Image 1 (tube, rainbow, N blue to C red):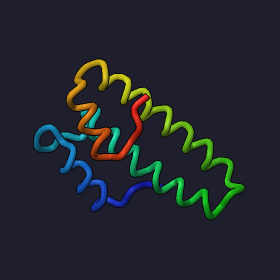
Image 2: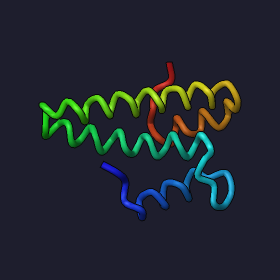
Image 3: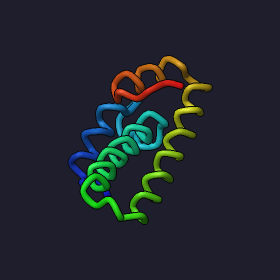
Image 4: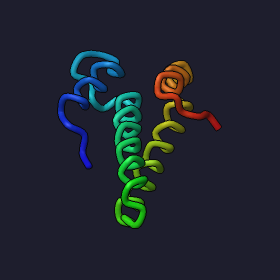
Length: 90
């Protein structure tokens, strides 16, 4: 369930620190959040798709680690990302 290139480019443009930035934690968190939303919609339809559910848990764990890193390194960027993506803070 990969993102299409147009949606991915839109997310990268919105969260990038500078032009051609795809590796910053903000961009990675935003891309993972989009994948989580797509997988959640998929799993509401296909309730017994356990392999996709496992993939979803792995993506959520990766996003959680990136958010923890961003919170420690740049709290202002962390709060901005949380607000724009409507995520919860622990």
